[in-house]
Length: 295
Image 1 (cartoon, rainbow, N blue to C red):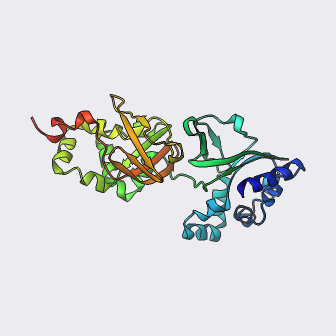
Image 2: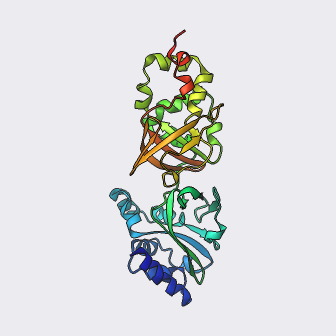
Image 3: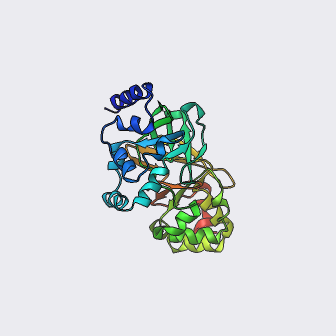
């Protein structure tokens, strides 16, 4: 069905149709109706733009209450839709890994190219079809609605009640600056994950800031790794001083990072992405006496 739709859009493009007319070729889709509701249809015909266009199924994946709230708040709706629009023409051949593009909101969206599984994503959303040309720009079809991030990785950790323990550890280890660098992935243990370590281990981490820093940096990968780009048995280098690696096991939609299960994936940040996990990850070399407090 998607291929038929894109073929139809391409035919409209050949006839000299503009962005809105090409989008309308899909019928009364969710995207078209929301663009009209937000009062953006005319603006999208006045200039050259590239639209990352979510499918109807992408909108269906949004929580019903969020979609309803957007329908009642035209300003918020327009902001979300503008986050999918870039000024100028951006084609597939212009894409590069970690490229950031300025959207009409003034915020950036990040492109990632994962060559091992031939996926290209924008803010973690898979690009299903590229380069549908119109008279005033291009359309790329995506599988997920992109929501503007609520700040940097540090901001996301600070704003999540289930990550309050992680936040306190980041502050204790003086890692705020490190987590504000660009192109980062944080596998973020929840409060429950830290509580599972037990009082002895937590006490030893509190007494040894360098050890705590190493453990925390073992959860940080120096590249933006959205779930669409992960693959089974992949080994990711981390930011700890030994550049230890963490291994992934993926079965269907389930992602395991060592002994930690990803509870919530693909939380976009302005400088990367956060995945919540249910265990604290510990490099093998720290599983001995130092961490356990034995002589």
